[in-house]
Length: 168
Picture 1 (tube, rainbow, N blue to C red):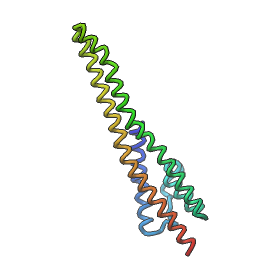
Picture 2 (picture 1 turned 45 degrees about the vertical axis):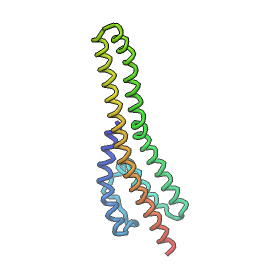
Picture 3 (picture 1 turned 90 degrees about the horizontal axis):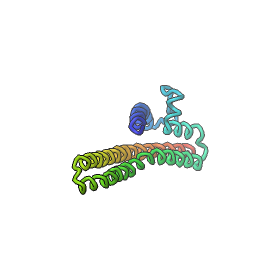
Picture 4 (picture 1 turned 60 degrees about the vertical axis):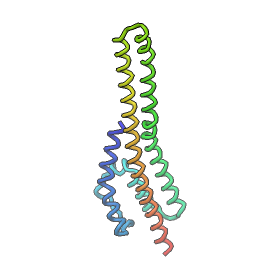
């Protein structure tokens, strides 16, 4: 599930962020247009929704700060999934290692080497799976943190630019 949503976010970001960055570089943020984006795609992209709201309802600094804060909450919620995997995967792997070790030791004590070997295979397999799950969570967490830091930078730039224009 995390892998699929991560890939979807990656595709979505590449498609939409290039246009956003290009227009921001030219300081044409008031003219940001998302004509190429369907309403369904816009609903699934929190950055586009936040930028649209900022441009439509940018009367006060407080409102802009609220929109940025709301986006931070959305980002933290999304990062929580990866954080959970990063911590939970190795814990479950360790549990999966320790549980079959009891019967493996009993097999060793009774001389049942086949039982011991079977339980040790389960123990090592769960360790590897737990570490793999943790690694996937860690990698996606690192990448998403960079994405959201970039998004926050973009939103703060837009908010500051809007306020500059209003005071000018």
